[in-house]
Image (tube, rainbow, N blue to C red; front, side, top):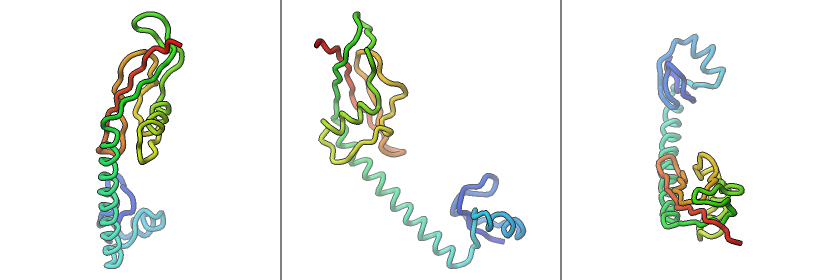
Amino acid sequence: MKVILKADMDNLGAAGEVVDVKPGFARNYLLPQGYAYEASEANLKRIEEEQRKAEERARRDYLEARRRAAQLAEASLTFLARAGEGEDAKLFGSVTSADVAERLNADGGLDFELDKRLVQLDEPIKALGAYQVPIRLHAEVTIEVDVRVERDEA
C-alpha cells in the first residue's frame, strides 16, 4: 500500500515522501496515528502544492535574513562597564545576549526587532576587551557584530 508520510520516520522515510508499506502497518499504525495518509491522486497533488509553498516560504525567509544581515554588517557596539583593576580585569556583572540585542534595537537603526535568542553568545561576556558576537538570522545566514567592553571611569 502506498502512503504519503506526514512526518519524518526512522527506517521509513522523510515527510512528504511516498513510501510503499504493508497494508496492515498503514491501516493499524500510520493512518490512525496521523503519521501518513493514503497516496491518492488528490493527496499527491496536495503534497506537491504544500512542498512548493514551503520552498517558496523558505526562499523568502532566506532573502529576508540576507537583507537583515546587510543592515547589521557595519554594526559596532561599545559597552561601558565597571571592572576590577589590572589589564585582564573582570567585570562587576556581565554583558549578555539580551544586552546586545537591546542595544542593537535601540541604537542600530534597524527596521526590525532583533530577538535576543538570535544572539549566539555561548556565555555572557565577563571581561574587558573586543569580541566578535555571532548573530544567527537564518540557518544559512550568520553575521558577526563587533562588541567592545571598556572600563567605565565614572
